Image (tube, rainbow, N blue to C red):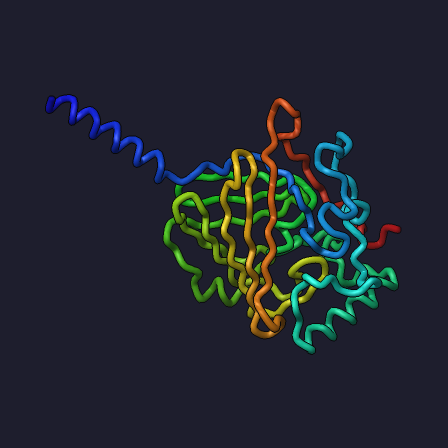
Length: 259
């Protein structure tokens, strides 16, 4: 009887460990709703991943939805303060005129955060107990989320980057991520500007097997009148479908001047 109880206790402990262990996000994913509800709606201007031709990815300027602002702003776009709305209108005028001045992709620059999580390209997630790395096919952009309890140093905070500095922790099966130290020459989504005070909060989980969901909340006391939230979903690729390998995205020299 004691042996039987001991055996059940071991089984119960193993089961509890299995339930509380973080999920494994490792793999290649493709966005279900690239650009979210940005003007044009889900998947605007880009074919679904399975419909993309084989070979190198298409030029980003050919795959991104038209977002020059000529049709105004979407009702669910980030709500800007007057100062940053004026910036958006200025950027819109340059884009309508066909200028690549504010087109990061045309300049071979990383898309930044949170825009990186909205790209209509593949993304690989590499995971271990201390760190998760997100690698985007677009311009070979990457970001790291540290899970070992470290915090951004003053040196990091004084040297903002495109991807920013991300730290995270697990809440049951949900990865909770906070990103700070972001450059202010990137965009929230589309070409919505932000300030150097922007921070990004994410809750990433499996919505169902093979379907990853990222709830993104953007806070910016200088640029936004209120926090902005969007939800992205990504479908895991498989070897059987032949879409589990990302292609190198070498940004061509002079792409910004190409017509």
